[in-house]
View 1: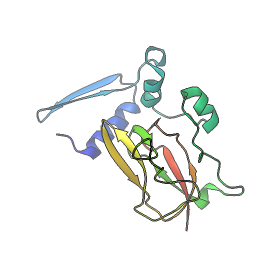
View 2: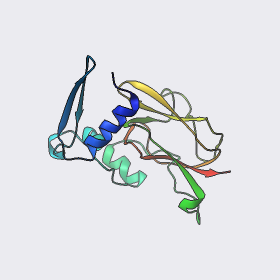
View 3: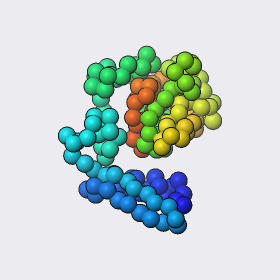
Length: 164
């Protein structure tokens, strides 16, 4: 079967090309990756996942566009803070972002919380697999970018951490 890194690279290649669909049979397994499709022919949530590059949208606007609640921690970074001051935790895969292990549980991480390297920050669900995303830096969380249960792309920013 395919290794995870190979799958990620295939998805990245198909997403960055004009290919509509790729189907591969390899070592007794079969893989199909849908690429670009006309946005008008697919439902809105699927269109957001299939887009090659996400368009940045403010949290309040995003909630209106997707019908999702705005994250209470989705505030902006502190005044005077620049990108050089922050470390960004990005999504290693395409999937659905979840802040907590279940709807009734507290979020793994909140704005203002100090985290250590290896601390679980969220879950990204991909193909019915729950992938825990851990912090790779110690510091303080200053921003959570996606809303709960929102689709995320490979490389999309999930958290901003002020490195300590």
